[in-house]
Length: 428
Image 1 (cartoon, rainbow, N blue to C red):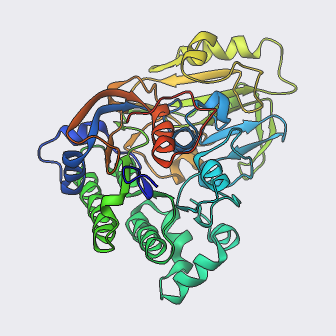
Image 2: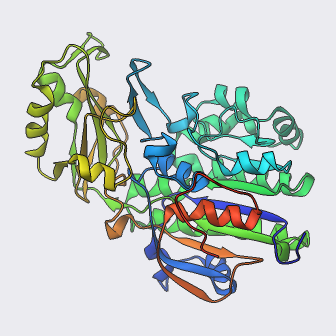
């Protein structure tokens, strides 16, 4: 191995890390600042669309837009399966449609570890794997058995992983478990590629708002976890041979207006509910992704439904309906060319969000989001951060606005593996 190339590449995603945080002199991020000082940072990184966790994380390990990797939202409707599916929480076995970094590294007969990383359910190429779930039974079924046993043997409360993941207030504990798992893997069998995903910042911004004291605490807390990871590499004598890529997946905006499109579809006679409020017939469906949504016109709907709904939703304050060319520019497939692409794509202005709730009662039971994402990734508030340090990464360099599709080719170059499908380019 060339001394210039890293022995380990660690990719750390801080969910919801806004680009603006790195320019705030009062932000409590000493670890991020130290990494930027000995490496490089971008002024901003533009997410993919929709600017939500699962499409963004999939793009960061493939280097391609959602229209190619197939993860078109946290929530979508699958026409082939005839049901709504949730990439969110890895609740579906639908695989990424192109090769990933972990595929290429495993093909090179090197080890991969992923801790709480989206779209890793059932991936044999990842030797040490705890996918991002929200149900304990999925953790028990799909986490790497050897790693799970080892962590239980250390006395870590893995029986709480699901409960801590499912509640925003307990994501600091979830992130603590994720870090402990990462530190264990680094100590026992350091991989060539490690993927780590922290969620506290995203959770507390949703619950309390972008500039809330809770969000500020979450930023400090996550920076501390990152500091523990860096310190562990240093103690093991691995810091100088490890490349660290730290980034967010999307920015955030505070919310002042919420729309419930599926309630409108019910009023239009396109959804039927039973007495308990469960959907029993769909002729149309809105899969909500915060600041955007896929709207599907399904079997049995009148021929004029798409045109009627385009007009109906475009009239709502803060909502627009994307034209076909807008979808293409934003990295989505054409309507009808992918089983989970909506017939219409709704886009909210910053400050506006949409949900999937079909009744007022369901909306009242759901958590109230004071901030969200999923909007047009070209909006400044949706920009996220990127910091890199380590071998082959020039020190003291400030990049301008970069594209999320550049993350995977950069990691591939550091790992010295091909990523032939990637549309992005290396930043080093």
